[in-house]
Image 1 (tube, rainbow, N blue to C red):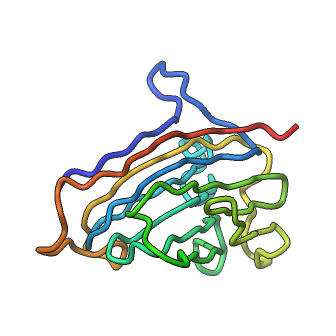
Image 2 (image 1 turned 90 degrees about the vertical axis):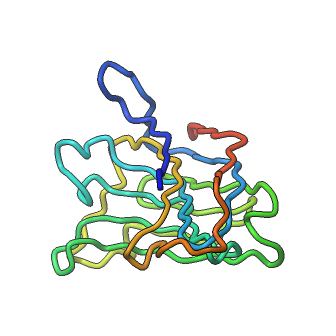
Length: 183
């Protein structure tokens, strides 16, 4: 299978797009089916110099296609004891699935805090003060670029393998991506 992604990272003369702080949102319709892993996420622009997870990662939305009613939001940062600390949570639609219609996924990012939203409802708030003492908060002071992708199949638990019921071609439909600066 071929997976696809759109990345706003600056590369090879491409200026790209990145920003620190503000509201990042995308209106998307997700596919359903075992082995499909659509996501809207962000990485620190310093990834080439400090590597992952020291650059920081913001998973605004991840979905496992075999469960089209639930999305996940997480942060990833270095932690001495485990190598990667990833606080976050999940959000389950009250009715229907993320494959039925478009939904707006967003993060509002300010110094020391990231708030995650679905369709205007905040479902998680992660703060620098909630990180354990041996974790390094990597979300202040440097810009992040955006990644939109659909990964297909994995031997790992995320997303797992496709099965005979998974319909191809599978598509993530993106109506828009918007980024706002906090004034």
